[in-house]
Length: 373
Image (cartoon, rainbow, N blue to C red):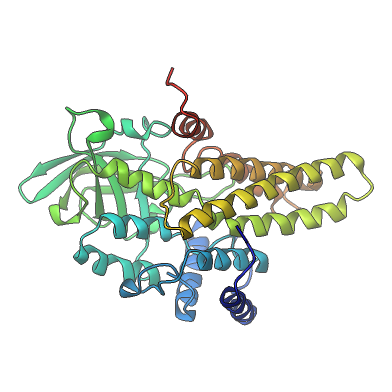
């Protein structure tokens, strides 16, 4: 596969690069100020949308431009290279779920406002007893005429305190195998019976929340897909989370490594560590390009996205450790510009979006064909 830009892609990249130079939103707020971070992200999403840079591979009838996925990757890569953000606003995973499982009314209702930033969303998947083993979730949606009554708890719900809507997974059938009894819903976060409780992370922010459902009433028309479609929908969402959007991360990583290479010159130990981190980042980049190629050919993301996720963990944690070590005592005192916060965030990479162990199991069983033990 030739990974060089076509003439059209090269022209698009140059136009985007010039636009970013004129529309740089300034420094990203620190990760320990979640409210400021959310406001920044929404403002930047709206700016990108007005510029015509979002929904590049979405169908035109839902606000997109109908281009191939390479254009999404170019956007993410140029954002990372410009140091503005590691990726475009994370709306693609949800958009793909609604495109694949939503009714036409749901698509028209949700996709344009999702894209232009008029509505914010959170993802109600993980629970206290169902993180790595998501299919063990216990939140229950009981059918009651033309509504469902939802009871349960979600955990690690990013941005729930700011969200207008939640993509919720809940059990609707307790008498079938656990993967088959899960259903997806789009739930308004101001519904009576929903309580959001943010909690503070090690780096000082309150990005993650607990969300409690106490008999919250959800109209049957807000079910996404049929009863029992929740698990295949979740695999679509998670596969799109673990994929070529990370090309923006790669650009950010490479810029950071360039700086570290300069500061470590002449130190053989540090130079070796930088070289190993660079190799990890390059392996991630090449596999993401291969994944992107498959999408351009019309193949939906599958278990190979778990390889992307593992390579991303390896690269991010290698870089986080390098920056922390290079910061010396300043990294501990916080006088280095945030290396300690970035290091702490890198440790979470092996948990969020599906733990490292889960990714290895997916690869073993679904790619290598190894038996379950």
